[in-house]
Every structure is written in structure tokens, then in C-alpha cells.
Length: 414
Image (cartoon, rainbow, N blue to C red; front, side, top):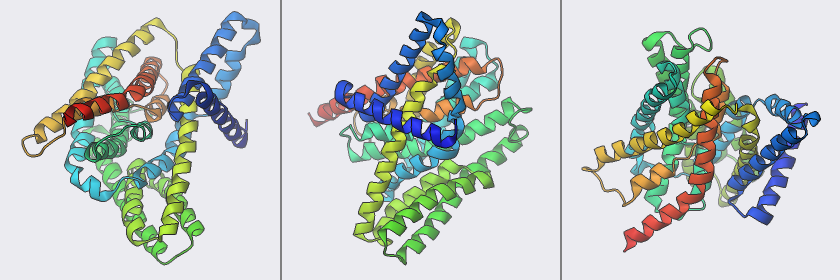
């Protein structure tokens, strides 16, 4: 199929599955589309088992693999989604919580990667470096999933800022850690550096370079927008920043996700305060909210159909169940340790640890990174475990975190 045909099919299916969810399941939009997509995928698989001569599953599997989910997300959709998410996080709110956000996005990712890596290596017999790669790809919380859930939950502003800020930044940091570990674990594949010195250099280049590029491009865009009073043109300029900045970051070998977050934060705060009119702000917000919703729908649809790419092997499924528990424990450590370190110096709301632990949803980025791994004996088990963690996270955690947050809020108010 051509790119236009694939895009058309995805949008049609996302709309159809969204309508089914709205009329019958009545789940939150993105989660509902994922559930309907999964159910449709399982129906196709069962039909193939019942009537093997049809070969429907093979046809669908071929179409799914043709989509190149990893490239579609990491080199296309991710920049727009992160930019859209960052636009709605205010720097003034983030400034008050920056220490917590920074520690969770760095110490938290390191802790989670280490815990999952050592635990998964012990459970499966996988080489430690390869298991650490799995730890790196499963540790970041997905800002797309997290920000979608936050819209449904009535959280305190400080807690919402912590969760949103951390999800935006630990995604970029986790991706950089993943690239570093890939270079160490697969030196003859997608090597990104040689040894620890090369890994440290890569981390600095990707993380710091991405932040600097995002701030510079965001500032230049802001200066241009200050001189213009035409909402349609200014919306187009923000779209150019998200698309062009992301591709420039990829070309310069700096972190494109961190670039998108930094640029989005600057435009969403400084830009809306000093660079654009109220009319333009309304159009920019509405445009990016619509982009966010459409891409969310397509992304969760894609996650649902990617079930065709995983291996249904009993050992792999067992490892996946264990990985769910391991990922939750690692997430608890990633949240609790920074908070316990900072607790003597600042106050935290009651229930911050359980809400942030359960609200740390995994998503499409983890699946995309797993799919991008070099082919090898351990890729099927990593892909299956990743998919199971993501599905559990989005459906089970995503549907219950709002209730947990509400319960914690009520108990705090007593």
C-alpha cells in the first residue's frame, strides 16, 4: 500500500472504532479505541484459527508490518505529540516543581532501568546488557497516555504538574539512555558509541543538544510570531516548528523528543504571554488540541493492531506477566526514592507516591523502541513483554488512576 492509502485506512479505522466506543463501551476515547482495536485483532485471529483456509490473519499481519510502527511514531508522530503536550504545561508551574521533575526524569529512569534490567535478566537468563536495554525502553512513562488520563482526573495542580512534567522529560531521557545501551549491547548493529566514554559523550550530546536546540528554535519562532498578527499564519509557523525542528534534531543527532518538549514549553508559555494575540492563542490551542486528539486516536489504534507482531509463546507470555510486576516495582522505586530524598526539604501532598506510581503509564514509545531493536534471539521475548506491560498499563492503570486520585484527594480533604 502507498503512504496515502495506509494513512487513509488508519484514519477511517480510528474514526470507526472511536464511534463504536462512544456508542457502546463509553470508555475514555483513546483507551476505548485501543480496546476496540484489540478486540478486532483477536476476532481476526480466532477467525483464522476457525477457518484456516481464509488466511485472514496473515494478510492483516502483513499489512501491520508494512506500516513500520516504530518509524511512524519515532520519526513522525512523536514530535507533534510531545510539542502538543508541552504547549499546555506552564513554565511557571514547572519551575515550582522542577527539582522533583528533574530527579524523577534522571535518577528515576536510572533506578527503573537498573531494577528492570537486573530483574529481567535473572528471570529469563537474558544477557544483562540486553536486559538493561529492555529496562530503558520500558521505564519512561508515555506523555501521550499520561496526559490523556490527566484530562479525566481531578488532580491538584502541583501533582498534575509533577506527573505531566516528568512524563514529558523522562520520555526524552529514557530514549537517550536506550540509545546509549543499544550501542553497548549491540556494538555490531546500531552502535552509537564505543565503550563508556562514547556512551557518556552520546548522552551529553543527545540530552543537552536537544534542549539547547529546542530553546533556540522556540525563541526564534517566538521572535518571528511577535511581528505577525495573523492567526492562520502563526498556527502554520508552530506546525513548521514542530515538524522542522524534530527533523533538524534527528539530522544533527541530538534528542528530538527533548527538542520538541523544550520548544513546546517556550511557545506555550512565553509565546502565548508575550508573542501572540488572544485570538491567535485560542486558534493555536484549538489546533494543537485537535492534532493531539487525532494522533492519539491513530496511535492507540496502532498499538492495538500491533498484537499481530508479537509471539504467542507460553514462556514469552509468562515473562510478560512477570515484567508487569517488575515494571510496577521499578516505577515505585523511581517515584519513591526522589520524593523520600526531597521530603525533609519540601512538602508533598498525601498520596503522591501511589498516584504517581499507578499513573506512570507506558505507551506507544516503548512498543516502538522494542520494534526498533536489531533482530536476534531475545527480541521476541522483549517485544512480547513490552506489549503486555503497555496493554496492562493503558487499560488497567489508565481506567483506574482517576478513581485512585479522587480517593486520595477525598482522604486528604478529611
